[in-house]
Amino acid sequence: MTQLKCLIVEDEPLAAEGLEAFIRQTPVLEFAGACVDALAALEFLKNNPVDVLFLDIHLPKLKGLDFLKTLKNPPQVILTTAYHQYALEGYELNVVDYLLKPFGFPRFLAAVDKLRVPDPAQSAPVTSQPLRPFHFFNENKRQVRVFNDEILYVESLKEYVKIHTTAGDAIVTRFQLGEFEDHLKDGNLLRIHRSFLVAKDKIKAFSAMEVEVNGKKLPIGGSYRVEVEKVLQKLTR
Image 1 (cartoon, rainbow, N blue to C red):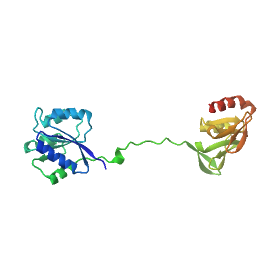
Image 2: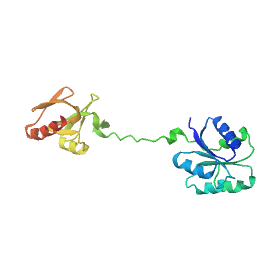
Image 3: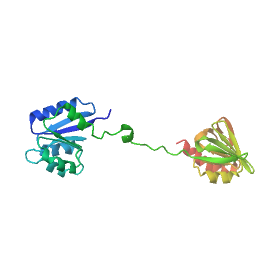
Image 4: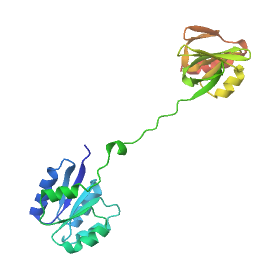
């Protein structure tokens, strides 16, 4: 349960004790502290997060409403006072409620019921998930979605390519291998042969002549060997 941290600003000890007792009996509230005047409250607020102020109006040194006017981002405020004539001014300062002393626990709860309690689900930070890249490819007059990270290797079939995936599927679609490489713009794909693209993160083993992907040994073409060797060596570092 979300609890609201409460600060009491009250110069009468008995009134402050009574408020503290009410706060401690209310599950949605948490007692944070008590100050005998507004200047002490200002110091408290500098270092302590507070959700609710129970604020007396007639305070020494600085009156409660004057203190409230000094706060740039005040917490929710419930005024506590024996003087009803300040109610209008209090509401003009957007106080939540105005408790006339003496008040009992039922009236206290009625005021608390007006407080805004944040919803934990709404206040929790939302972490956006990165988009998982994918492409749709035309196969037999239907569009098939292929996630980039599921591609094992791509095989050229002249005017077509065959996309081998971790799901065990092989999608045949109309592309030349170079066009396919440009279409995906995926830095994980490595051209090792005029007939093969392989996913670098799916390479299980390699030699000067071939790479192994998912148990399949694929040849490294002579014209690609130098560049492929550079890339593969980087993978081992």
